[in-house]
Image (cartoon, rainbow, N blue to C red; front, side):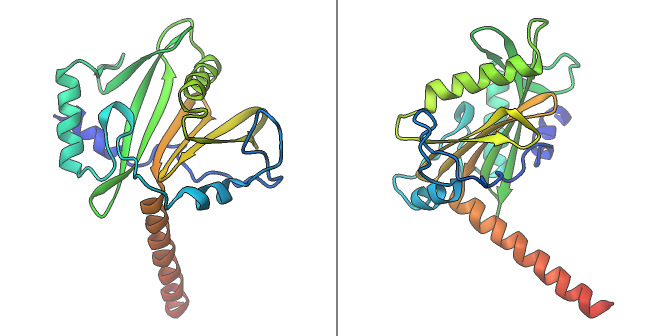
Length: 217
């Protein structure tokens, strides 16, 4: 049971930070290279559209409670959709890309008791895979699935490595963010309206804390 509970402790994966804003206003339509929109303008144009998209990775869905997430996780283990990692300490999702094998650790995030973000940390699972090949294979797989199909693609340069891109797919309330961080590929499925409220709540709490500190010192 401790192994299963660990899923819920993965609230924030190391690389799951807020998307970096594009200073140069890079293209939403990356194939033409036209300077169309910024990431924020694409988010603003989609965030209130309907229908709401709920289901994300492996049948997990936004607005699931912690209990529902846990129950679904246990069912995936029973169905052998999740397997133990090489250390035998955690259940992970095996991923088979066209050239390499990988595995994904999962970390849900909650606001007001409901899931609004689902994070993946994808790493190599065989000798043929490296962090670089896993990233490019994952990016290719996501491009094939989400490029078009009603999603707007926004691609930006990774500030830490200009040779690597970060990818954003946006449709209605759903924002899928894929990027490379260290030895892993990170993917976040984000329910944008709830994330916006959660971020605002965190900012208000931070501002309140600063005000209190100024009073205390």
